[in-house]
Image 1 (cartoon, helix red, strand yellow):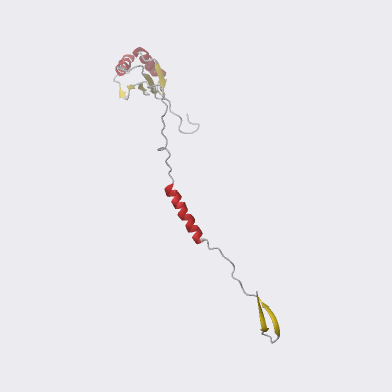
Image 2: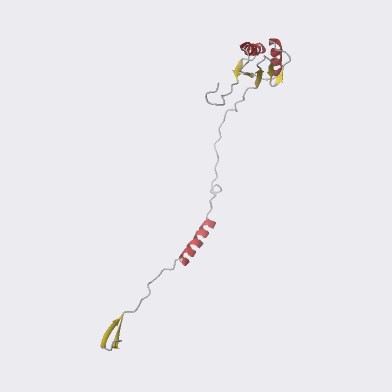
Amino acid sequence: MSIRFGTSGDGSSGLSFASRRRDEPEINLIPFIDVLLVVLIFLMLSTTYNKYTQLKITLPTANAEKAREFPREIHVGVSAGGDYSVDNEALPGRGLRALTTALRASIQGTGTPVLIVSADANATHQSVMTAIEAARLAGISQVTFALQAPTAPGAE
């Protein structure tokens, strides 16, 4: 604010109190942001994220068991007509003797194999029992059956 002496614009004399317009202070943030970005880049480049090189670690040792070995699987297929296949090779005969001979030949040099019987849904019960009997005669004690889940809900 300033005080002026003299006449005013309307012809009267005296003191006039005219207010001067003051500029409001402002803060320019752009240089501040620039400085912060430079500091951030400096910190990112100078920071080491790999702390493994500073530490010398000797890891403990343990005696783990040997990985479990799975037995050899022998697949016997039984068709709806009573034909057999051993490991996807069709057998010439349908009898117990031919199947037993094929199973004995396939287990040569293996430990204790597992027999997986994949029987057709329309195979006779006798055909499946013949496959199990042939496994017994060949010396295979572990027998399991392959199944297929129904494709549609409620399908049998």
